[in-house]
Length: 190
Image (cartoon, rainbow, N blue to C red; front, side):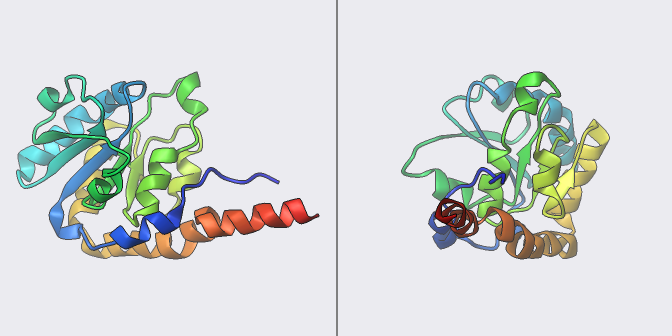
């Protein structure tokens, strides 16, 4: 039996809120994965050029030069005490990945974090990303697909709400901490 990577969903629940009006794109990660943002620089800049109210937030210990490369980009310093409160402001969470051996082995943890916060996602079809995203957001590969996905999730409220509904019904059934804990207990009791 294969159990997916999970995060403690219950610690996210106090932060659940409607952030659709905020028009904010979030990426959470570390120095080891920040170079994957190269994939979305042009797409985010195009979105911001068309919609100057959109902001991009990097939750990390550093932003490399992406706060210069991406318009309306802001570094939010990651901290164990505050990252959930910061992530709660997210409208859309992204996980761009270059298709390489290292990234194909990733567990989709960024997606799991955004989805635990009940935020729709956009991610590259690399590794387990496609499986996790399902109907909880949009898979994007090309610059045009990233641009279209960002605009759709930021401005199509009906579609956005459908994604949130899938998160609540489908994602939580498979990736909720309690569901996976119950499965693990069942295995150990065999």
